[in-house]
Amino acid sequence: MDSILPGDASAGPHRGRLSRAVKESLRDLGAQLSLLNHSVGTRLDLKAADLECLDLITRYGPLSPSALARRAGLHPATLTGILDRLERGGWIDRGRDPGDRRSVVIQAARGRGAEILRLYLVDSGMNTALDQICADYDDQDLELLADFLHRTADAARAAAERLAAS
Image (cartoon, rainbow, N blue to C red; front, side, top):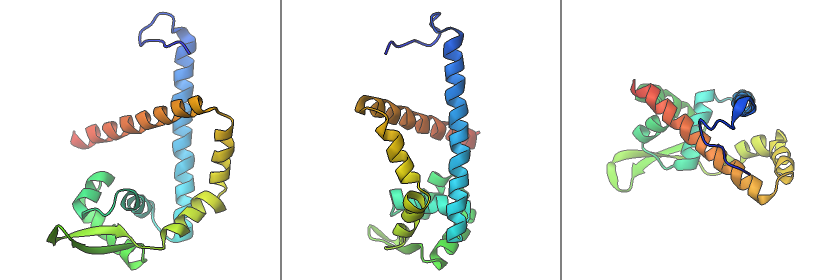
């Protein structure tokens, strides 16, 4: 595939339409994933922010509360309420940081993750749908898509950080 540089005159209106279509598809994807998250959260009796924090803890934990607050973009006071709900629900464990006994770390409770994965991957049919979609692409296409999504996530993270800092 030929690469078109930003500002390249050969880009033309077709390139602009494609770029807008990609951005619109990403907006739609965000909305649909938000609806899926809401459905999963409702089944588990978790608020959207609770589910997001639990996902961050599962992927990056164990974490200190301040590290989780930074990753989630939440005020520490707001995070305290979320962590209290997650702990009461048996979703997380709080323990002493082995490196600094004065500090607390949060980690996902063992055994509960399977419940969430089942809802996302099996009960919703999302895993099967993604497998079917990926089957339509060759390895090179999937590498390109994975790179695009990774770079898009990085851009979103940087945009959120810029807004939070201003």
